[in-house]
Image 1 (cartoon, rainbow, N blue to C red):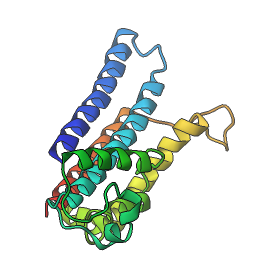
Image 2: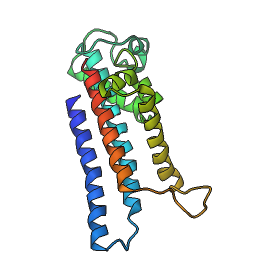
Image 3: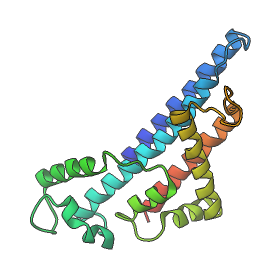
Length: 202
């Protein structure tokens, strides 16, 4: 799990570096260039970083469950046949773990873990209880507000990725964006990922 979190931190650092590039170019060009697309890219990459780390948390959690490090959840037991690479549910060796790893990647390769509901479904394979309840407890913030905020961030990511961030009410104009929004988005996603990591340790 720690390796996944370290990669997440590196991914977010690259997001912040992109913001630094936007600021530097803005200063050099005295604001004559529209650099808003660099900010939009930051939104896309931030959600991508969350998606990637959730994939990794789940993948590692399943492997830990089958290797006896983590208590196997009831849902994972019921879905055992999906991940089955051997004919036993006892602890497995390195060769089987490598096969299991490949199987998990295959099964989850087409899935996205961005929406709160999808994230909760994924975590139910490796952790008992509602992940968002645990995240809310870690952050000392209402669960409903955390979930709603993530939904809004993913909605904005989708507008950027699939709709060119165009405002349908004002044809030819895009939704406004600024560095303050990006800073808040990155900080929020960072706190959510770290809360998930802490929740998985308990």
